Length: 330
Image 1 (cartoon, rainbow, N blue to C red):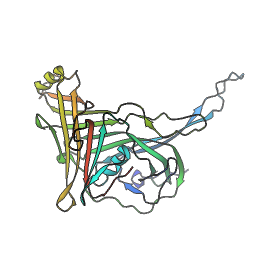
Image 2: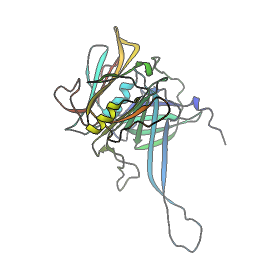
Image 3: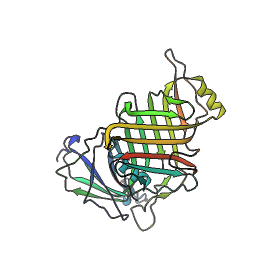
Image 4: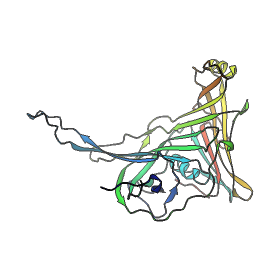
């Protein structure tokens, strides 16, 4: 029996696929993932609950193959475009270097079709597990007031291969990740928000229960419901937000992250999220304490409006990246 070794010896690599169920591994991208990243494989039991004259449990049949996981990373200017490509699909790209890439979540056409990818994940000094046709269905972006901005991407995959030969060399981006001091949150009517913590969750509304008769592995996930987007902000308490919750006041938020690293020429890397139609949770309140009062604002960001890249089209959100990559295709 061999020990798995130190977690720091593990690694995670990804590559976009072209055909569902067909892995690609010839030009994989190394991801500098955080502790807690997981690529999980579960083969379910189908219990044989028969009455057969004994108290012993009967051997189960083999059920569904469930491959899923979470990628947890510092939000890096050089790789955020790849992860948004996996989550949102193709971007509209412009520029000659650096490049600006825009993803829109339209309200009238709510299908969000991301890109499938192969993932290799090794723990400790063990051989790698490989998950085929992964697809991101939920992302979370969060920051406190002292560390790096974190991104968590939850995904589901079709199938797996075990005991894949270990990679022996890696290439990680030397570009520094976004940290709390790179983040500016503004509201169209109120200006800059002085925020202590931020958490944004986007659920793409995909159907991840796609098992059908004749196959223990799932079919490709498809659109199932309207996507959801929420944002939580910790700020010094202000009565106007109690009033706004009662009045159902509409807000237009922009979250901008600007790197100190240069994407091209004199232009820095940047990442922008726009939520043009937000409203506060109607139960908004400030808990009474002996110290300075805080508001834990929860905003529902699904009401839509126009953004920088949407022209006259109403969208639920816009994501925009400036980096050194020319295109992000489907």
